[in-house]
Length: 374
Image (cartoon, rainbow, N blue to C red; front, top):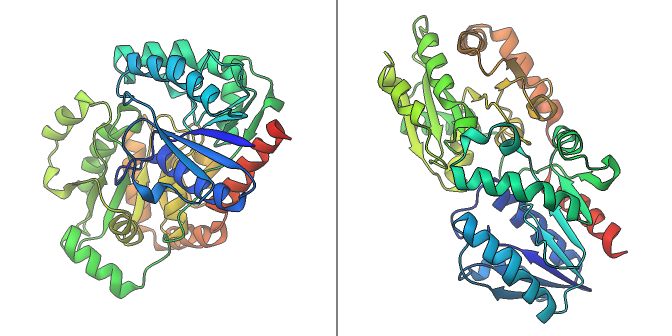
């Protein structure tokens, strides 16, 4: 079989959530199935590290997909031609984008449909594209996969897709995410938080990640904090959130908030595994990879009680209403002063370790592919 794959998000040193899903699952699938040929379709020059096996044939199709108009050109004009030229038997798209102009079987991994519920978080052209094309992609797909039971139910209810057409393929966690010894944690804390314990956020700085309320809640928490906690944030702007700067400028304890920008995978592991707790309170999330990574590092969490987060966090988190800054602040206070509660959460992370692995993800995605190609 020739399986063509949209790998436009395999970008050197720029892998994000869906990019990591693409990388980790396809690396395992391609190596495990040398009997099939994989045609990796890039939208720009690629790095050789993404050619995981000899049965992968890389193809570059311009232009780079940096705007909805270029999405249309790439998926509706270029992709059908490439599928014909290379006689592909299947088109797999790990980021959910399909082509409406091909009759080839197609599988879309739609991670979530946040844009259907929160269109205001996206620039006008993107929200129009997503909300016009993704319902069509969902119906055109031969089969769908998504990353949580919550997202499957959401796609079923919002787009009217049959439940049995969608497989749940959970995200995984890189094997590097493991607990650190206390001595190593102290070194990391000295470097990044001046030896102070810290809460940590990881993710893109988009409005749905709710960072403005998170830092406002931290400011409330600091009014009574006697342990010198800091809040570290890792990530970079996706679509700029205008409320974030305004909120930050009005904080009384802004000097205790540290923006670290994007970090290498190794640094990210070190910082996460040394955190007192992960504070992750998005308004909408299809899975929440940082939640699963924190659990693997035995780091307790403060999490949203919304969308998919309870499904992933299980008993390892204090759940809060993401729209209630006082409730988030109270959770910070509870986890910082209640040693018994803190240790209960740590034990929960240990029980839940191993629930999400990339090998499980790859196996489940391959099962979805087999349902289409037989």
